[in-house]
Each structure stands twice: as structure tokens, then as C-alpha cells.
Image 1: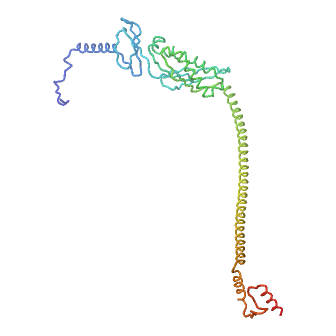
Image 2: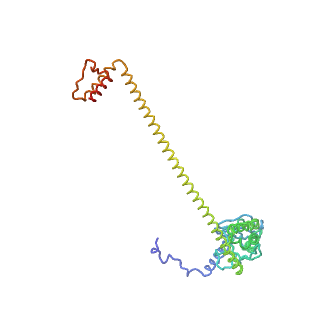
Image 3: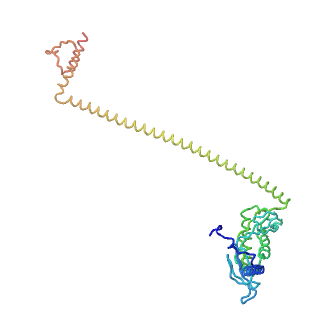
Length: 353
């Protein structure tokens, strides 16, 4: 059936209902809503619930922790559900109105006296959470008392105990400052863990000295920076001298190595020349010995049988150069080609004539 199919006579005519019935129905509805809303409590996703029984068999605060959802309680004050936040909470000590968290609780900055007697205002953010709402309720109290009687009275004294061990200048030492901040967190946990509160972080965001002290610190810092600059320049000059010395030693070593290389080359060249000369002399000696041996063998050949014929052949070669010569072959002046001495004498006599 659609809206168009509805007939006017099908609609209930409230004019025909008595007014007392309408009023009675409204009263009953309000009563039921009141009863039901008083009997059920809704615990949000970021909340814990702890039940307190005021009238009944098990009176007192129950240890059971209720989480997200609707939970039944007896109305009219018989039972009551305490709610506590389960997400991260922020407590700030700062002189600035702007906070890191919209719901953060803020107090004045921590006024800490340093170990050398000066004062410094420190802005600190403390991040914590409730880990055991039963302990919080039984040791501190309901509502926001975990802030008023738990966190707030403890944070600044523990910060003074830890950060107060530093001198004025040591606040600029970030690693040391972080270490002391962690010490403050540990001190807070020692005091708050038995009450069901866990401190997660303690963060120093800003610190400020008095104007006069701040000016003196800045002037001292400038002087220290000048001293450090001069020390750095002196160290740089010393390092430069070391580099120059090393460079000079390196160049000297290069020259020495080059001289050693040249001397080695000269030595090797001399050894090479000596080797060549030695081998050449040995070769000449062998050649000369061979020539001498050859001459010796030839002389021996001339002295053996048949040497006269060989000598005649040599003399015949000599006579080849003459155009015409007539020599006696008999008588006292006859020529014997094998008698070289007589032949030479004959030629001398002919030359004298």
C-alpha cells in the first residue's frame, strides 16, 4: 500500500480520543523513559566505568571495570556509575594561554631554582593516562579529583627535584635536559602508579630566565663562541701545517724515489753494455781463434805431402799476371818453379839489368 492508497477514514481521528487518555499516555511514556534512562548507563569508547553500590547487599565500590556499552544500574541512588577517561590526558604548566590540547588542564609555568641559585620558568606538557580506574577512585576520589589531587600536586615538585639539579647554562644542554626530564617522569610514576595513573611523557617545550640573567647568558655565550672560534682557527692552522709537512715529505719521497729509479736505470744500462761488450769480446775471441786455427791448418797442409804441387799452383797464379816471360828451364840458370828463392833472385837480376 502506498501513500496514495490511504483513505481519509483510515486515519485515526484524534478528536474522538479523550484528552485524559492522551495525557495519561504521555505521563506513562515519560515515566518509562525516566525509569529506563535511570536504569542504564552508557559508557563511551574513551571511558572506563566503576560501579558504586550505595544501598544493597554488596555496598561500596566494585573492582569490576566496565567498558564501552550500556550497563544496568539500580535507579534512585541505589547504584552509581563513575566514569573516567581512558585516552591520553594532558596537563600543562605554561604562562601562555594557548595550549597544546583543547581539553588540557593548564596552570602557571614551573618556577624552578637551578643548582647555582638562579630561577627559570619552564613550560612543560605532561602526558598521562588512567590505567586502573578502581585505584584512582579508591585512592584519589571521583570526578576530576585525579587532576586536582593526583597530577597537579605532584608535577611541579618532581620537576623541581629533577631539573633543579642542573645549572643555569645546562638548560641549553639538550641531551642532559632530556635525561633530567626522564628522571622527572620516573619520579612521577613512582608517586602516581600506586594510584592507578601512568605518566607517558614529560616534555619541556620552553624555558625562560629573567631578562638580566638572559642577557648575561647571551653575552657569555657570545664570548664562548669567540673563544671556540679562535680555538678552531688555531686548530685549523695546526692541521694545515701538518698537511703542508706531509705534502713536503711526500714530494721529497717522490724525488728520492725518482732518483733511485734513475740510478737503477743507469745501473741496468751499464750492466747491459758490459754484457754486450763481454759477449762481443767472447765472439771476437772465438772468431780469432777460428782464424788462427784455420791458418794453422793451412800451414800444416803446406807442410804435408803434395805441398810442392800446391805451391806450384800458387806460383802459376802469380805468373798469370805477366804478358810474356821467357825463362830458361835448363842449365845453371834454369828455373825450378818450386824453388821460390832462386826464382826471386832471378827476377832481381833481371830488374838490375
